[in-house]
Length: 50
Image (cartoon, rainbow, N blue to C red; front, side):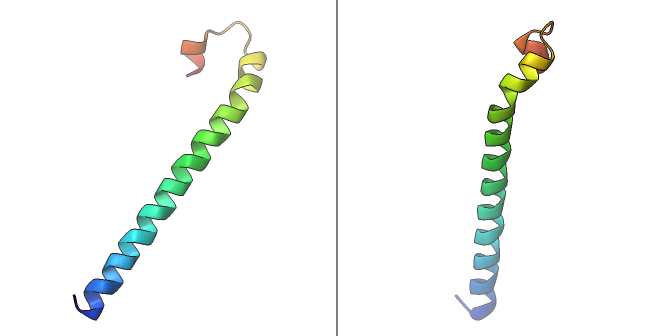
């Protein structure tokens, strides 16, 4: 693999790593906030909140 191919491979790797991190962070925030949201909207079902 030449230098350009190696650089592209690393760029692809870091983009994928950052994307996975952001998805994990989003899922964590949603899980942490869900009880507060459920309490705030007590008359709504879990299906509606999802």
